[in-house]
Length: 208
Image 1 (spheres, one colour):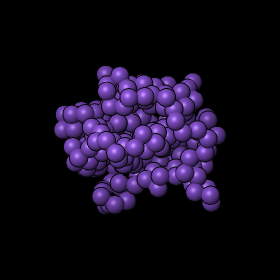
Image 2: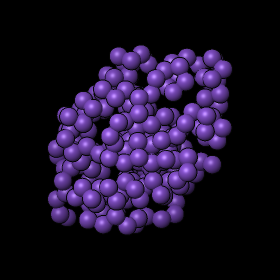
Image 3: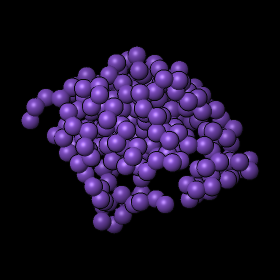
């Protein structure tokens, strides 16, 4: 197997914007290309590396910088690293960009109103908007969109496949992959690295 250059794809956006969905799809695409690939999901990292941290700005930044440090170690060892935490603060994301170097920021754009209306199966946004949940990103806690991301995916109008294609095309433009054709179609086995729901078959559950 040929050696590939390591890089980090950093998905950022509101909860429910589609970060984990497209990250899972990208994981399978990079694996299909014979690349060493890892996913660092915000919630999964919190349960392990950042256990005990809360949701203050300081704690959120600490979590994001820890993810960035691990991504840096993986990237410099030739791993295609996919990160998909909310990462609401621009300063922490930019600090990770400086540390990692080979950093591709993907902004998954969706509004609070659209997510609350169409992609809120647990009703978390409705509770936050009603004041029942505090410190909820995008409602009463800020989310700072990237100013110059490499990729912007408008997930209010794009399908996950269309967003994935944008990411693959950018990775090809930047020289990280040779072919931006989507290679994996249909149901995908769950990577075990994100908080997406998994079916009894081991496949990712499609959220509607």
